[in-house]
Amino acid sequence: MSDLVVVEGLRKSFGENEVLRGVDFHVPAGSVTVVIGPSGSGKTTVLRSLNALEPPDAGVVTVGDATIDFGAGPPKRAELARFRAQSAMVFQSHNLFPHLTTLRNVTEGPVVVQRKPRADAEAGARELLARVGLGDFADRYPHELSGGQQQRVGIARALALEPKVVLFDEPTSALDPELVGDVLAVMKDLAAEGWTMVVVTHEIAFARHVADQVLFVDGGSIVESGPPARVIGSPEHPRTREFLRRILDPLEGSSPFD
Image (cartoon, one colour):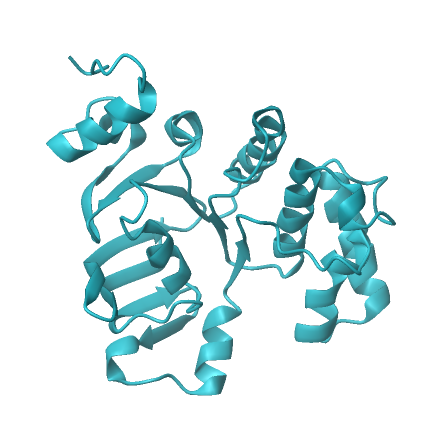
């Protein structure tokens, strides 16, 4: 299985705060990579580096057919556009256009960015909305939808761009608990269909059952990586064990690995 994402030597600082310290990892085509770690560990910065929403200070990043050496100076506009076209992002807070219907939210990217005929974009958008369980909601506005429904629209919007990689930035963290399952079910279906996905999340059960590899990020570095059975089921690094102990058993404080 060939790698669709290759990250080498990724570094990023905000002022004197170095948030990424030489991050390296590969994402095979058709696989799901889940990035976990405590708040402030750098995991979202890793994700946003994959489409240059947060341009790194150094490092070479390949996504699909595009490679940028961020240490060689700011990329040219055309180079950056080609790089960003390889992926699509599903945001934590939905980021839907409030004045547009669900259908228009999904079609705007293909029409405006990719210059697709609107009729073709709308036909594709209706198929995608049906795929995420919202086929009857095309004419609704975001304020008429639940948070989980809005997030599923966000997923349809990302898929409409036909990206090679779909990036998820904590897609369930802003949702009420009872709405989380619907979003995770859509993501699980996408994984089964062979979409390449990089997911930043605290949903450890999703990581355990859906991920092909798990990256544990702490202090701006990948502390531990590997299949979920090892990283989550039998972590080797003390910091990983401590983090998972707090996530998996926050009240008892006892380790599930003891």
